[in-house]
Length: 298
Image (cartoon, rainbow, N blue to C red; front, side, top):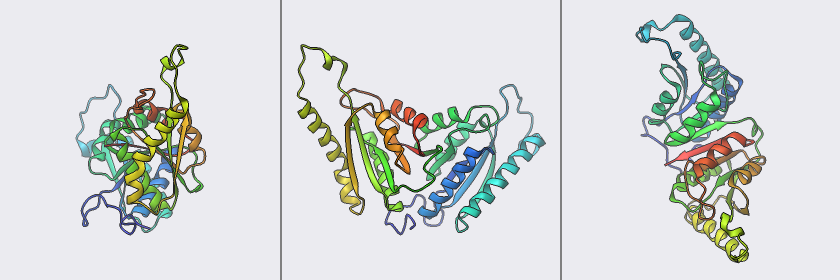
């Protein structure tokens, strides 16, 4: 089912829809990202753009214009793109695929690409990164500094489990992540598990302060119900499971990821109990999840 067929908004104009952009470097992780991106492009009825970044070392002097890049870097990059394009076409023959070789700093190139993309997809690690930088650091930086959805394809989740996990807190910044999670659930025909993890503030453990735990738990359930209310009305076909628990958000989301096809989190938010920045949560989930992770900034 395409995104249009599902009644969801399609990015870009009808004549030129925004592409899904996937970054490749020749690694097995990047190949996994290409397959994920091709599948998502197929589901959403969007074109796929495969990008390889030629990044100079820190001491290289940019003496060459674009047509005069050092031959070995260009030849290697073109080979990487050819292999990735073949994999995407074999995976989803009906998806429109283009390739692009770009010179620049990887994180900057991907951030620029995101401006006109439906989403950015990349692997969790590469062959020492894109010509030098660890892909792990690249993926973390891009995911937490780029506007719009960034999907980091971690090992796991290759077999469909029929569940999307979304991190929920009480901040407006979580809304774009919920929108993306519900859309993915519709397109995949999956259950949406809304995970809200809360912790008592440190001073709650002082013996002179008493807390009504039942009241706190009820308050946390209300947070989730209120945050999900409008989305349930908009997507009545999605089965939603409210998963509210007293735990660290990273632990709760990581545990849920073991049974999920995708975990979706916002890049920044504030938990009402514990005051933990969701930015740190998203980084923790990126490092520990058992399936692909989508980080969505508004």
